[in-house]
Amino acid sequence: MAFERVLTRNVGKPEALTYKGYRQLGGYEGLAKALKMEPDAIIDEVKKSGLRGRGGAGFSAGLKWSFIPKGKDKPKYLVCNADESEPGTFKDRLLMEFDPHQLIEGCAICCWAVQANTTYIYIRGEYTKAAAILEQAIKEAYDAGVLGDSVMGSGFKLNMYVHRGAGAYICGEETGMLESLEGKRGQPRVKPPFPAVVGAFGAPTVINNVETLCNVPHIIERGADWFKAIGTDEKNTGPKLYAISGHVERPGTYEYPIGITFREMLEGCGGMLKGRPLKAFIPGGASAPILKADQIDIKMDFDTVAKAGSMLGSAAVIVMDDTTCMVRSVARLAKFFNHESCGQCTPCREGTNWMELMLKRIEHGEGTERDGQVLLSICGHIGGNSLCALGDAAIGPVQSLVKGFQDEIDRHIREKACPFPHRRYFEN
Amino acid sequence: MSVHEPASMKPSGPQQRGGGFSQAALDEINALRPRYPTTEALLLPVLHIAQREWGGWLPDEAIAAVAAELELPVAKVYGVVTFYDLYPQKPVGRHRIRVCTNLSCQLRGSEEIMETLHQELGVGEDEITPDGRCSYVHFECLGSCDTAPMMMVDDEYHENLTPNRVRQILKGLK
Image (cartoon, rainbow over all chains, first blue to last red; front, side, top):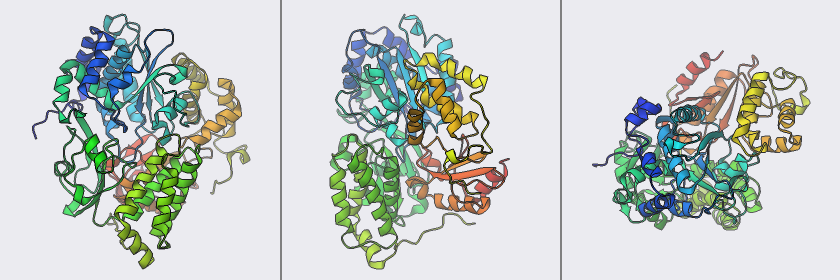
């Protein structure tokens, strides 16, 4: 496929790590152009591009920016969501470790557009290497006058700080992240008010994912029309990173026009591991309902995946072959959601625990005939009944297991054991 | 050695150092202050610093020092510490090993990595080897699914693991 990489074009070029090298590769031209534009014109251009949030929700980035109130009576903030914790997702880490200035440039353009003078990059605590690389890049950007009292000589003031999280998936939820940034337990807030009005430290705040912000310099530099020409349709535009893992020959982060089919993506990473047949795949991280092999030709964009009953989410694609036990896989995800539920809302706190216990019981051959229905009933009690999306995320994989793989649950119950031999991966 | 007692029952554990922050740490904390409009927002960064100062975990003494430095109630600091996975409240080995066992790693053999650690170190999960060298735990997704299975040793990622590779890595830990 003839597609020129956009977001990952500097991956594999070590010079991109330095300010000078990034400049030589054409970097900061988008910011230079943006600073000559009216802030509202930037928001309009980003709206027109159709850029949708790459963190999971797929909300229009330009629209989000337009919700920030005008005027200077309160400070405004950009919080870059670099808390990448969705199981299966590792694309933002690549962007930060290999092209940190691209992110700084995207943040700076966003700040100019919404007139925010401070950016916090909230990065998950485990990403110590990415945090160190970003710190160094930010320092160089200050030294070069790209950050500080006068961004590229424009008189616009911008400070940028890396803020490390401490290991909590829920801090990827935008209001959980704000609580955590403020030095609290990362428990999501009641919305409204939305962060655009009352965000970090009570002030209007934009929260965007790393990949979303990395798209921005290119949109400004090359125009919304160029961006819109990439992708499936008007609502699914631009380049997209897909993080592919599991049973494929060459797992990794791949950049494609949004809406590439899963089949093409699979071919791009060398096909299934050892040529074994595909059984199922998760198209958008642990929160996304599982799709079966018959969906192999699905276009991997926001709306097509949603129509198929799942979600593109963070585009973390987890591939499973025919030897995979689906009960065991979903039990692991249920354990994750149980561990990560912040405990604030009873349906999520208690329901995720029950789902984990029941799935483990089924996996160990101790399930009963009615377990499938009970699981669906628990899902029904969690869905829509918690403050944030974690509860809804937790039920996605479980519902798709019961609805799509009832036969596997039945076999566990009938045979009183897991019917899939636990394969040894390594020859000792 | 089993270390399942709560930290408060170990007033003079081997890694407790006595006193508060070192001057270098205080300088580091003060340099962070202008970054935030509130003192409370310093809590996560300062807990990271405290953990480094107190040997990789947060005894009650460290929590009290953080509370005093930021003028926050101890209960408030304690509440935050208990929320996050990266703030252990009981002693850890000199090297802390975290093995990702989430789905992408499970599909690629992370359970055998856990078994290898158990065999080689001779202690269970979340216990410390008798020489104090290592402790290991399973962990949620560490964002390295394309190089599964993987583990973190202290701050470093070790990727594309095999049991033999794990043995080699362990040999290199002093």
